Length: 342
Image 1 (cartoon, one colour):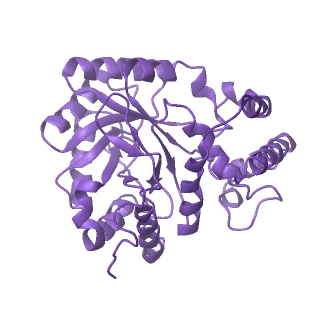
Image 2 (image 1 turned 135 degrees about the vertical axis):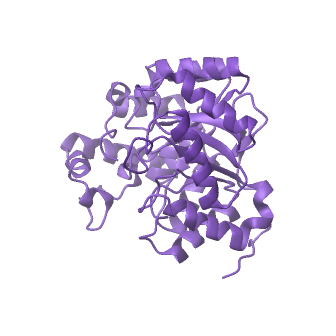
Image 3 (image 1 turned 90 degrees about the vertical axis):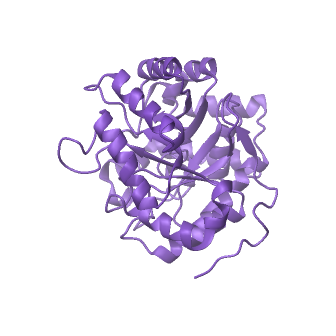
């Protein structure tokens, strides 16, 4: 299969946002390859999604060493697509990956040790068939490893040319602040923080994370912006067979709750009044905040990517709309509903 972009590298529809105080710009909507890019999925559909994203100006593709299943397969499948059809655009792409979450059994398959992070990056580069990645993350904080060791490993990867920038993901606010401080002292700024945040998971608003990111001049990229599919609108009339909630009992129990169904119906009505679908409004609500550099979407079809990319066309909310959203979802400011659903 060969590929030629339908309208050149970019068609002018995508917005690019400076990542904190750095010189790097990211698309307002980025594509995550956590779901539907593994060895058990249809590779032709994965390729079509990457092509669609690129045609829309989505230049940032986010991976991790464990993405699959099986672990590592998403990096290999993306590498096939990249080197077959998009290699000539490598300088126009931002490719990120991560290590630190459970990749394999044994003492070095997870955590934040120098061994785990540097070996993890090296293994990812081999699977991706690249000399470097643009952003390398520590995937999840490790309370058993000194932060100084984890951050020193990230610093070394930049100095060795294996990563252009580094970031952290799934860090609590206090650990985030300390990680930023250590990296600053080492001379390799923490470019970006990747964290879970959406209309139904608003805890980061009150834990100090936003303040740390603003003060540090770092970027912010949000994963699970649609609350693992809850905000797609697919669950307003029950749980469809084959959907994610149909395979995850805890998620199913959540979306079938009467109070959650009520919130979804109210949010759907508000989105319709704005001329948007519910998932478009959920993305737009995130992008209205200048602290947010990019939203990291997942998809199972090219059509979903096209729909979600359209969210950036209207990211302006009236005071009345924001007040309505706060009334509907305000209790989510103190909760993290989905942390156990991965």
